[in-house]
Image (cartoon, rainbow, N blue to C red; front, side):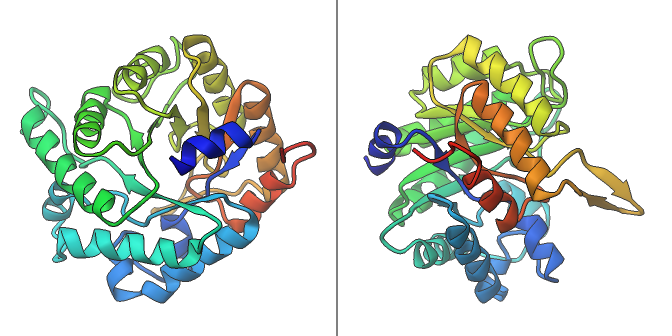
Length: 291
């Protein structure tokens, strides 16, 4: 596997940064719909992250699963939007960089809190995993999950449908009580789940924590597992300005926070909401970051 070789050969691996927030800043639809109605904008974002030093580009397919598409009223075809997402990332990646298919939450809840069964979630993720794997991605990243039960549905479906490397990443709201998501899932539980399904890496992205808070989460993960750790913080804590969420951490400050994550054990680094190619470039250029 190309990703496994990369893990063995490189001290640090760099994923890209925010996609939806960057598309929004350019007047585009923040979701995978842009793969179909504004593909050149998506391609340009991918290319900018590649130029910034990212080793791995993530497809613009976050939440492009059937349940999310249908419950949000998007009139698009699941297969078409996912295939387009891979094609755009692959065009930007060329032969030098890897492409990971992005698998995100449904936006719905499992019983008894919601109306969906684990079987329905499993089928939902199995469909997306088959499409992405069929387009020859180098791995799948299962990210921004807050409910570990839903994450397990995604992990199991992806593992059953492909032998590709899987990366699990949860979104945390606090570093207290073992680091917890809004649904109460802990770092230790996430690490155990990743090991159960033979994930290639585990970690955190998005959530309510800034890079320094994510450094604490990184330390908790390092105590819980020997798996490679991926950390993709937001560009600071989210701030509500009117009806819009903003992130205002500058690239240099962001990189300093990410360096603390690296010092606490993270070897796969990237960015989430509010981050830009400038943020990723600042991380790549951290003293001693390449190796």
